[in-house]
Image 1 (tube, helix red, strand yellow):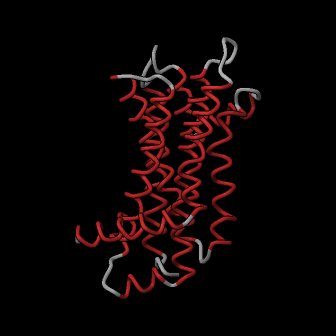
Image 2: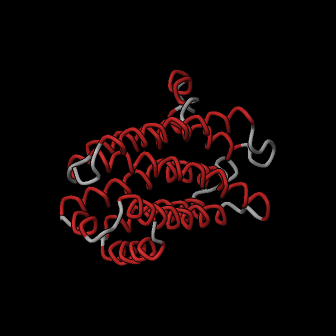
Length: 233
């Protein structure tokens, strides 16, 4: 593995991201909405922290999935991924480079929301840690979709249902017990629960185990799919 190639991919993808408004919007949309609602709508009945937790959970469960899948499928469709692989860029170097950029950009978004929510010190660090774990899982899911998709249309057909389930189930579970029963096994539901009780009961063992189980399952799926399919297929 060549670190220079990985950094070159990160720089290339950063330049492409700045030019690609649809991907740039995905990075910025939820932090901006969170800031606006927290500062303008929050009240005694609906505290500002409610919007921070809600949109942080949705951001973790939505942005990395659709961004990672979109980047990979777009470069497949345009042929730029094939050119990179033919130029001695290893698939793992490409995945690490793109994944690192998406992760860091999303991490900045979660940091903005954490500061907006008034988290400070160790509480802010705990907020970032649990969101980082969720971002990593979503990145894996987005990468799996990217590997499976031949073009952007195929990626959208897979990523939209995945991100809707991951991002909206925690919100819907507040109003429906059946959804909550299903959602308790979903990593975003556990992240939402942890963030809700962060000041009183940070990092409950059961929630962390469920999140790690989600991570292990997706890692196994990723390894199996990555081993069977060509990144360019």
